[in-house]
Amino acid sequence: MIELAHHLLPGGPKRVAPFSHAVRAGDFLFVTGQMPTDPDDNTRCIGADAAAQTQQVIANLQSVLAGCGAAWERVVMARIYLLHFDRDYAAMNAAWEAAFPAGRLPARTTVGVTGLALGALVEIDLVVAM
Figure 1 (cartoon, rainbow, N blue to C red):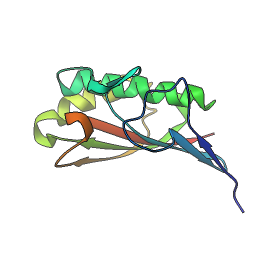
Figure 2 (figure 1 turned 30 degrees about the vertical axis):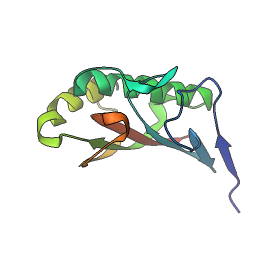
Figure 3 (figure 1 turned 180 degrees about the horizontal axis):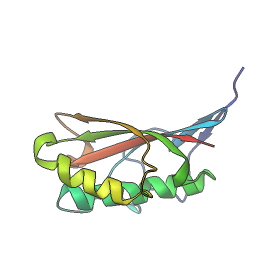
Figure 4 (figure 1 turned 60 degrees about the vertical axis):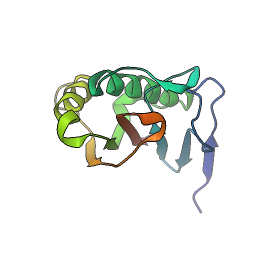
């Protein structure tokens, strides 16, 4: 049986709902969708547009990975949720691609949604190889 390790990180971004920041199952880490919030203030989003919010989400994800002893370079899969898909897809893509070395992008699914917590424009969750 695969052991599970639930990570609730005291130094991680403040949660916007009751969840673990990440759960490790075997050699994989499943990271809860992160919002573009100030890591110390879960009541407001940082960034007025999708590019800035994507950058903040990435920073929050990297903080969670560091707290779990995982590396950004080991991201295997991402799911990205966009509030305004048609409007923000290109801007989000540019910010996302800039966060990875050339030719080392993880697998990804991107979907348009009707709403995100705190009125955010973007949310991203990850699967990471440990």
